[in-house]
Length: 154
Image (cartoon, rainbow, N blue to C red; front, top):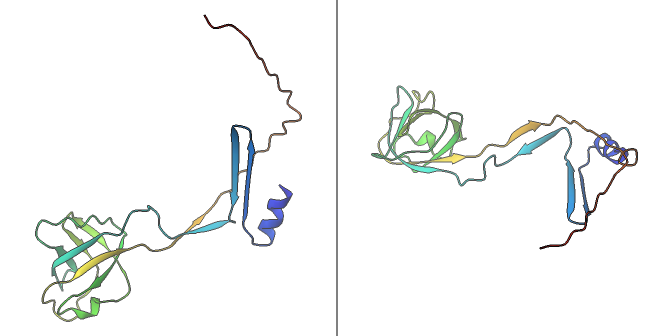
């Protein structure tokens, strides 16, 4: 516990592993917060675009293609003809309208959409604050009784 207090005070990381016969334990302390680069481990979704509505900001995927995105996901565009401001710009946060359509916000000042393009999901890093609860049990104060019964198998 003293080591962990020192590690926290000096903004370091701590990893402790211990084995006791068949059983073991691992204790990890990366500090009061942790940056998550990939929250689900799944590959990023990528879809082909059929249309981008300049007035509403709605993006329609190629006919009967489900995008697989969720509200709050971020996407980056490429190969868009016409509305070139989308190509290789910063990732845009989306709102899902239906399984084949999502909204990217205000694009009314962009040039007119002509055709094509791809939208690829981008995983944005997020910061997770950790609440630390430590419960210590001093095994030396609790008497341990081991009951061993020997019996014969039939």
